[in-house]
Image 1 (spheres, rainbow, N blue to C red):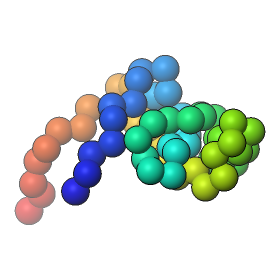
Image 2 (image 1 turned 180 degrees about the horizontal axis):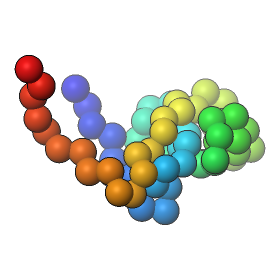
Image 3 (image 1 turned 90 degrees about the horizontal axis):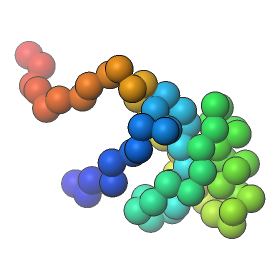
Length: 65
């Protein structure tokens, strides 16, 4: 499984639009539609949308039983 780059804090809690290869964030927005529209404005015709976790959420590797 390929990991994409760490998302900077400035996008915490926002919707982000990755380029189609998921190698860089090309836009962000408060809503998914806003992030998609912003990505299309910079020329990314097929952005991959993702919701960045809030800044106070820490993700760790753990297994649930």
